[in-house]
Image (cartoon, rainbow, N blue to C red; front, side):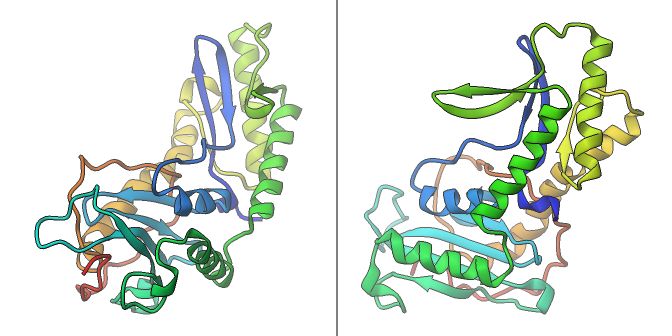
Length: 272
């Protein structure tokens, strides 16, 4: 089973000890109807405010998913407080030579799904159908994979930490204070994870491994930045822009190398 079924296991150290996290908090806000199902199915995404206020997600097959709430048209520059008028979900497959965003769901006025307006349920159903079609793991697949990673962490000596009746992360016992013993436990956990194909990232000084080996663990995060940079130019021609605050990336780390940028696409956009 491939490691993209869940985010990388993230190791860190603070004044309370060494922590291992297998999940990020579920995203909130007006993008949540899109980002929550993506996160639950292990899909990496960013919220892109430079090429248009939309969700950009790279699927395991290398194709791109674009989704966003849409807003009433105005003669002036779009106000982000304008009333929402629908949802847009589109797909772009640069590896197949596609240069235009293919609408999968569009409930703006006079568009193919206009009867649904701002209703979230039909948009979510269309999103799930497309993820199924592209071979994205189900929510249960991701949860099973995460459960396995967490069992390996416990086998290595980590203990589960529960907050508000919900498990949030794993931590090495507070009684374990010897630096040599701590590094051995983290190294053991990484060996278990790596043996079963899990992605992970870890500070060099927490493990008993050469620096070059540990540095390679950060490779998915590094590639995430290159994916976003490589896609910004072509997405700016495929998605209409809207004003907002400074660019704010969020979500999960992408782990797929960027595809070659196709020629400039048309402008179907998220707004008329």
